[in-house]
Image (cartoon, rainbow, N blue to C red):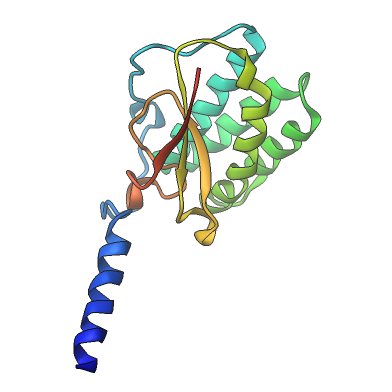
Length: 173
């Protein structure tokens, strides 16, 4: 009888871990522009600065999804430049992402950065939809958010290892 409970518990754990696992293993680097999907209605903003910030953020997110460290470094440096005249704390956070030694370290700094970017642009959307997405397994099980222009999940915290892990938590219009 005890074996049955252990077997059932192991099966349940396996099913739960598979739920967010796309199992496309490998650390292949891709061109992050190939990761970007077409949004059904492009997101536009009331303010050109908000548009620049969002586009820079999306470039960074796509580089993380593609597991492309060089593109992530370039995107975070570009975003740091865009933010210089906007918000000092965001500049510091973009600088931390840029200076991070590895793509894993860049991903660690990405969650807080997302929350603060969202505060900066939330009220500036004039058309289209920004999808606030969430992966419960990111950041050592603490969870992590990111923004996307498409509803389809493309997880920047794990790249191909768990590409489709996550849910849409909010639609910002």
